[in-house]
Image (cartoon, rainbow, N blue to C red; front, side, top):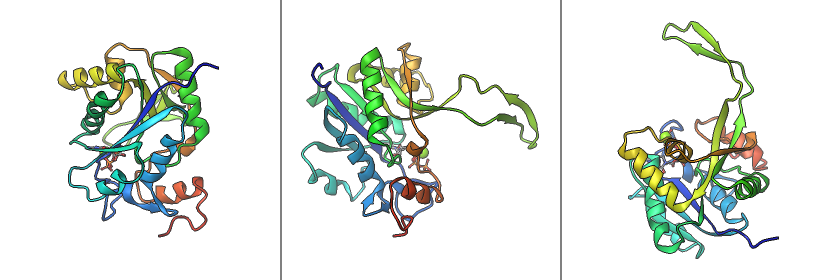
Length: 236
Ligand code: CTP
Ligand code: MG
């Protein structure tokens, strides 16, 4: 077995969680004694080779100091207006402490149920093939394209369609360059893979699982509590 690859985590956690409609951003919602962000952070920290994790929090987030004192492997930076800006702020910080070809795993704060098995499968598959990759799931439902009038226009062939998840794993410098170039070109960068694809880099999907869903609307908290094995359904 060769030595463990050098990996860093990045957690964009500077969103406002508008669709969740809570009084504070969803990443700070408690579920079983830990916040969603802490669950996501712990899931990254326990992956093999993880040297440190950079969390991007909103510039005025009062929780920043909680994380600064928590663990020497945890760093906090100020995020930006869009998710990609938050990721770039974290990569800018990593540039000072990491090597250009170190691996970066970008993981949403809002995906607290990432299992060790899924995270480890992503790392081992990407290392085996090179390039970069992301956890994803093949679509299982029949897809409909619907017009503004609510009528179905067509049934879309789902073959070859996958739902992108995180972590998304790429080498530091190419990821940073691809994000900067894609944003400068006005490309909609909704995840790291889209910037890498736009830059012509190979991006591999690695089979994930439904438990790694993104907590987005209020009903999702109960599902997250279920996957995390929290008995009372997370009513805190
Ligand atoms: N995020 C971020 N910086 C932003 C916007 C989003 O770091 N400017 C982060 C969120 O905190 C979240 C992840 O990106 O961990 C995925 O985004 P999403 O689920 O859309 O979260 P929010 O943008 O907070 O939610 P909403 O879109 O409902 O407002
Ligand atoms: Mg959002």
